[in-house]
Image (cartoon, rainbow, N blue to C red; front, side, top):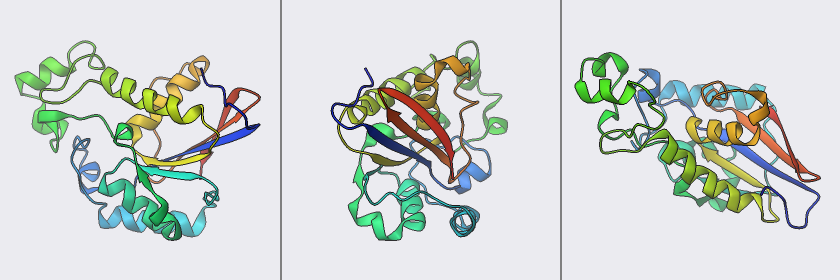
Length: 202
């Protein structure tokens, strides 16, 4: 399923976007097209200054099409932003009616209680989607780029990154939350001899 058709080594860089104001106040932020907050921008600039981000000039570059992912690319790799394409399949889960609200704001709402009760990976957010639905679209998109001959740098979100890592490395026994990356961080995936390996980034 994950074979590369002709090249010996293929890399896929998974970047999580920087912090937004909704992230900062622990609100659900999926389909909301919000910009990075000042703290998020400053943090990315500091990481860029002190951490060795990888060379991506030989990669195809994708963002999820959301402002926060493009801004992250623009800050970390300003000379590469004109090459970026968009794949909306790498967007975060759509939290529907819960978008922009925190747990404290939602905890007494019956629709929220129904969503978090039981298997909230399978439960669909009102007017949104479920974790299962998000994982399917992300992994369908990932499989398409995994089998071609190009390396990729993907500027995306915490949920999609964690889904990819959970699916590629099931023997590590980590759930999606344990694969979550910090803002401006992520993973470098390498496919060699038909086997995926990874390391954290930066």
